[in-house]
Length: 238
Image 1 (cartoon, rainbow, N blue to C red):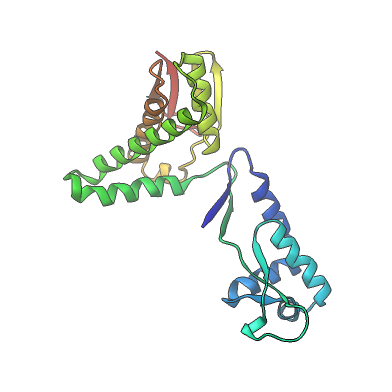
Image 2 (cartoon, rainbow, N blue to C red):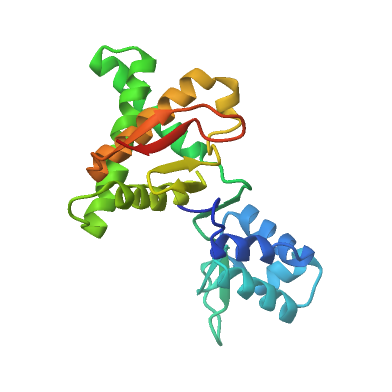
């Protein structure tokens, strides 16, 4: 399943999808198609919402346009009839979430799942496995960005810029406080970080330290600097 997550900045696809559901008739049609468990014709959808077939077709095609539904032509119920094959609709395999400020509990969940799966194999505690999993995930993110951009040897300013680009996609709201410092104005793991700050902040620090390693940004360090309302990590030039 594809995931369209609106964090910081808001992806236009997620905004368009949510805006499309602001119309009550469109929302009812979308719910009906999702609950049906099979492809739905325009006639069926119109009857479910109590609107005309023409209006239902307009709303259904709008939901296809923004990626919430998908459409194709096929006989309804597998029965072929004389005439044009009807258009049918079914849910698209997409997960749309909007959170302001950005939240990425899916990333934290993936790290913790890796940790649980690795605990028995590596003979470590869950906490140790979580920190190792977070570091590996960060290294992979950094290495992917480095492979994409091929920046060569990184000075501190360039390293901070690359890190900021990656972290913006995950809702950290990076802010350059100067040529040698990068702060993160949002914690994408809230409110979970508030429930277990020592664990979540340690995982976050391991993740972001791994990011620098993957970027081969040896001129920059990720430091734990907890501040209310912000991410607990800051990047500074060595």
